[in-house]
Length: 264
Ligand code: KIV
Ligand code: NA
Image (tube, rainbow, N blue to C red; front, side, top):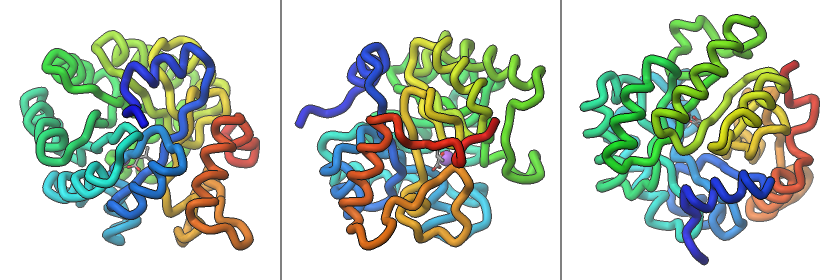
């Protein structure tokens, strides 16, 4: 099967075809997810929590991200692989370039992801200028959890919502190819998705986004405290490949997420 590319994703948005994305951290799951038609595999720094057992993503290092990205990329033929830039690995455009090169050259990623709005615009522009595809991430930014004081919905406040919309436009103009919105009220996520030409992937951001992403172990029902916005797709007796196939089918059909997974 032909590799999913930035061009494929943009075409899917234009044609109203939903994008199914999941996290993956190793070769075995990468192969299964790829075979079940997941369009994008995100090697997320959520691995700090679900693989390493930390309480946050803050302790994750570049070396760890490269290691997991390499394992996922090796086993994946169709899906686009995104490597996550961890906490403090993109504090300047130069550092971001150097670490993105590691994720792409050593890890085999086809895109990198970073968290943040206006403060990251110059970095996104620099990466784009050097041929690095970028996924931006607005709304709840887990790397800032200690500054935020917890994981909660972002953008209910009108001023924060306006800033998020402005940041989304600025990131797109700077050259971002994709945007993740995490824990954002449905109406704001819908507004941003319609306003942008790049695909917007939601997690706890409602059905109107151009695609959905979940943390793999949340949707397989093995996370001790799965967030409200996730769904257990294993249900009663499904195999892992069947659960992944149900997720892909639900995202494509627009039947996931439901209202109980959303913030209003
Ligand atoms: O690290 C991660 O898994 C993520 C997703 C939740 C978007 O950033
Ligand atoms: Na992440």
